[in-house]
Image 1 (tube, rainbow, N blue to C red):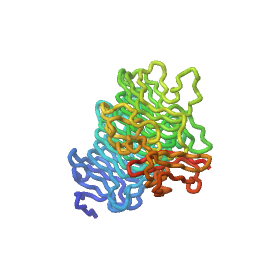
Image 2 (cartoon, one colour; image 1 turned 120 degrees about the vertical axis):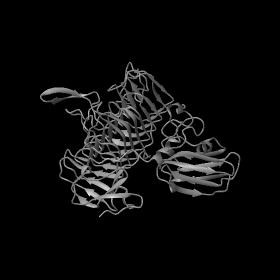
Image 3 (cartoon, rainbow, N blue to C red; image 1 turned 90 degrees about the horizontal axis):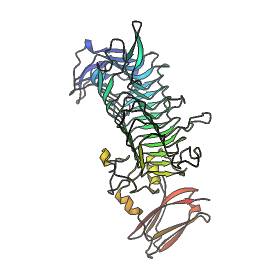
Image 4 (cartoon, rainbow, N blue to C red; image 1 turned 120 degrees about the horizontal axis):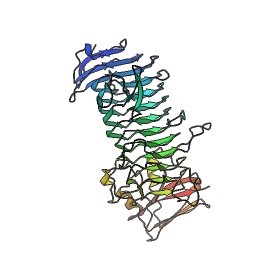
Length: 532
């Protein structure tokens, strides 16, 4: 039975017993809703269903969890040659992901967008333990030329707010890998074919964890591609060479990659094989190339790697305001000789694994930014350091925000507004103090004001386990607050005296903390270390 929502025109309900929904035999039109009955089912296929540019057809779970697991060797859910549609798991207020696809056989995708599918949106879908890619949209060119470049273009596709984890292959595999063409055999004759382009692709606010291969791989997205706001962790768990990266901006891809959090993988954080003109900014990349368990041996992966896989000669790559922590290899490594006027600016790079790998006669900055001979790049206003706090969880943006605030990065960057970059990782104004900060975070003027020198002095006696605080103006100290770098308050006191001494060993474990001291007119916030 089809139960209409006040906001949706219910046209059809897919029962648990149905596996194939053929739009050519149904009177589905733009603005209609296809409800999917909740419960467990084997596999599901939609094909030949078309909305229009103003009215998408909506496929949605009907009030409960739609759960798919299958022995089907082709897909868990497939959408084939459909257009102007939305596949969404928002049909139950109590579920973040109302459609779940899990346990597909080896080599089988969880969700597959195939044929001439175009103009669609996929959101609030969970894919777990797929036998190959979690979400895959890379129709291949063929002998009849229907999907080949020049005959078909995929347009305006969006993937957002999905949760993909435990995949054998890529979590997201969007667009074809061989932009420059490859050879197939048609009627016993070899033929070079070229995959179709994608115009208008957005991949954002997705959560990826424990992908066997790459976290997000995009290819052939030649126009208006944006990859942003995704959280990728434990990528490349199979540790397969050249298949173990956080994000791949593949051959034939332009556009922007920004505000992504990429943590703990076996390969490079971001690979850039794009057309040129690519903007890579506000990303936080932590521990690329470090083993996920003690038995793994991983390569010296870099935070960001770029080469000339498919570069338009004379175009530029820009790497701006990224924060890269403890790569096993270099921070940023560039091999692109065809590009010109590349810009590496406002990046924080800490503790690269190659600090002792280069000759002392070479530049000491090579572990942070490595460019081979012939690369045209401006490297400026970055912050490089060998040291990094081991007490901070850099996968937690709140903790890393507090830690980076203590580094000399505030008001040290160059203006990047001419690149159209107006916000930081937290969507704060990138020029909140009229000058850009270095790294993924911008610190608002209110915080900067509190960091300015005051008459309040904080002296840490690491050996005595004491914190001595006093006011040079001899004003009474109204409050002392001590925080973990995560932001948790762990000590509070109101001395109301000109000076005070805190025996930190009575309250704190060894580590790094933030102390905030206030008088009537001033505030002092500073970091200190305790060693007991």
